[in-house]
Image 1 (cartoon, rainbow, N blue to C red):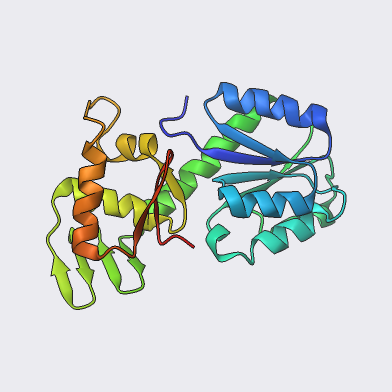
Image 2: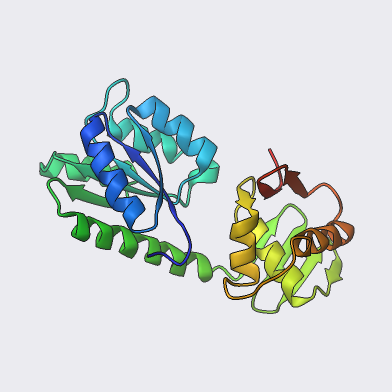
Length: 228
């Protein structure tokens, strides 16, 4: 099972294949959403900002290559992993897939366990890449993980550990809605039991220091940084 629940968007126009993929992925702890064509895939990708997209080449309306190219033009999806999962095994299809911006090209049929391993490897590679980014910025806010320092313009803030970690999570994916469970797990860990109001208190303190214009509450769900 995954330590954190990654979201995977399955894009395939064959319902049976989608159902098989969904079953095997969710059994391994992934969260899944699905689309049956390229246009829906782009719309759902914008809405949910999945960690990884499994994309077929042969799709109605807009094929997988065009879909991949379109997704790669969307700034908030620049770090989303795209892996083609298709029966098209020709060299030119694979080359076109990578030229469109794909991270991997997987041919069907493939055993579920092998597919899961490939997906886990791609997500691990992404995690390592993201962890290597020591400085996170948004407008005039700069968070330096190495120096454990946050600055707003020319003002340096000395944030307590939990507030720093909370801001680090939120600023890492602007406009992404983080659930309360995601935040609790990332900042306090699964083994720590904290009160329901703990996160609210830390959010309030961050707002006092950063200003009210950065962190927004999504009622019944969680919080988002720099809401669009």
